[in-house]
Image (cartoon, rainbow, N blue to C red; front, side, top):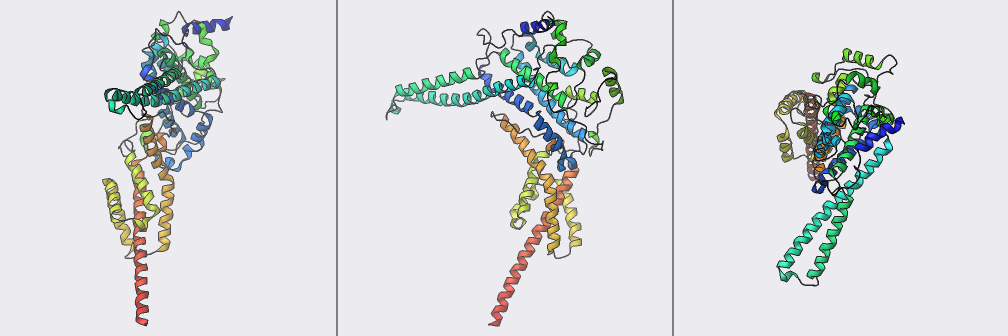
Length: 507
């Protein structure tokens, strides 16, 4: 009996959500924008699966370039990953709220309040979170079908527009109506194309209501938030936490108080996605100081004490990667960590430029002998003033110690090895920066899944001074190898000329 009481309010609230209703406005031309939202939702969900989380924990956090230029503290790097993930969640939530404003369902109509309560108080009173992984997997497949249909629809609509344009020209210019392509045949082609477009509209969300689309995205978003809490170690005894932290409910829940009863609050859906996965990210390393002073995360003993009081003595050991107070601030999207500190390339708007510079050096380092004057001048023009000054000082002091000749095979080999070592940890961040930027630009115009490169894998959070020091070292090495190659070639030419002179004298 108790189980029936818990499900009735939800069924009443969601009555008719899965149906097409002619009386309600449909998505129409917003299909393509909705498909992009669905694609972002799928990408976000897949980025949180066990395999991706294992890669984040075991590979991404171990990247040498990240440890050298961003931070060597696991907790801080995970907080960057969480901040970027939650930023994506909030962007999706705002988009769903805009769709919800056109819905008739009261929950979707005020989705911004519903989502705010989820973030601030961990309240999912409407049971939007899917109860298990299989249900979410089915919704992902459904969204993938909608995305594929929308992609095909986009192409077929363009073809239809071209055919209709040609048909209008044929009707106005009789000379075009010849060579077997009669007006009647062309009209049939247009008619077939229109039918193909209509079929794809039915297969996509074109004729679906705002309630139908917003419901899919809202439930997926709530499930993603639950998965994030589990992966990053924020899962806890929800009932105890809610009783301690929830002083009042937002107005949206009062507006549907006739729909929801108290027994629904104790639905088994509360645990949901939190209960399936290999496990959350653990605190894997001892606390180390971050390269950036503004990046250091302070522990809050008061917050930890409050959490222990809420959960009681029987609570299992916390697996949070940092304290709960910080987690709540990130879930509320204050974006303090997402904004790059002043000491980073992101704050100086140099991340993309330095990525191109590093990649250019990497290409030149592969064949320093082929560097001509034009290439050298172009590379020098790419250098900011800070690197130019540092390079000038390094080269002047290096030239004094080097002497007049640079023909030293051992030293050349040492420089070559040193450059390879630097590029091995520096160039991945540069390539990731280019990939991250290109993916963001590509996503805006295409229905293509991204590889989910995180900002912390790029040069965005890299310390500017350390990055410039590494680039300067590469340029000094490149300069030596270039001079060594020139001297080697000149020596070979002199030897060749000398041998010819000797042979001529012998005759």
